[in-house]
Amino acid sequence: MYRVEIEQEDDGRKIAEVTELPGVLVYGQSRDEAIRKTQALSLRVLAERLNPRPSIVAAEVQLDQRS
Image (tube, rainbow, N blue to C red):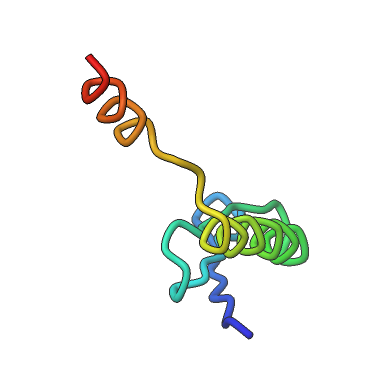
């Protein structure tokens, strides 16, 4: 389980972050919305860690090696 840190911005929006998962930082109009968005993005980040997509750089290197 990861900890969600929530703060309120000057404009009233909530910003939520999971510091253990780099890149998981979202805004929401309410606390609940920010938490829901954080949960969804956290799942995407964790899924990407389990099944990473090939990077564009790696594909370019492979193409260069075939030439």
